[in-house]
Image 1: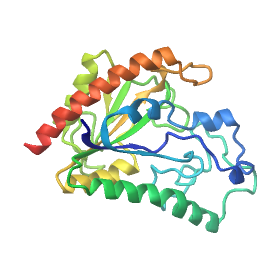
Image 2 (image 1 turned 90 degrees about the vertical axis):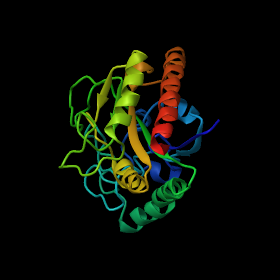
Image 3 (image 1 turned 180 degrees about the vertical axis):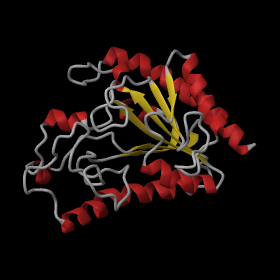
Image 4 (image 1 turned 120 degrees about the horizontal axis):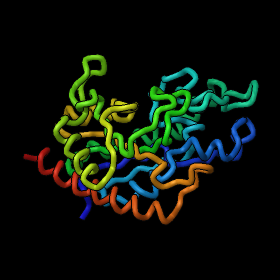
Length: 262
């Protein structure tokens, strides 16, 4: 059985093209730490009809930013979440190279996502991420310990619309349903905190909502399955967490599908 959802994994890679590596000042471990560790190993195993994987690191191009989002943490980031410069002095890509990255890496992912969401058999989108145990310096919850699971629909902490953010991408009742499912399996859960959703949720999710479909963002705390010293996955811990997460998500997505179609 394939669930009628699109699974998006925009930060699952730490690959950097060889031609770009010399311009980047970050170490291999720092580049690795910039990816959403564990998302491919967990969410990539969901029985969904479409699963989209990022081919390259968010350091090269961040798929969860708008194409014209500039600045330090824009679509071509200048610093990482710890405030470290991504590029060596004088080696930030020029306008032509930025255009090539958008053409070759950014737009193809979003085109595939848009096309998948237009399929009549697709009922929803889940944009999947992982995050550090404690909020890093550039995050809105700097220094704070995070919940195991964060669910987002571009709303407030009750899943309801926030006038400052605009329309939600999934009814609060459906988001809270998934939250309760995770809580029953022993996970701590936060709603729209510290993140209410990124560009993929806000852009593709809003378009989906106009067509009666749903979209949500899920973040899983890496502390559940990584070694805190080097962020490497601990296989024994991952196995148990993955089984529970997949069970929770399948159960929730089946129920969500029935509610969306009713």
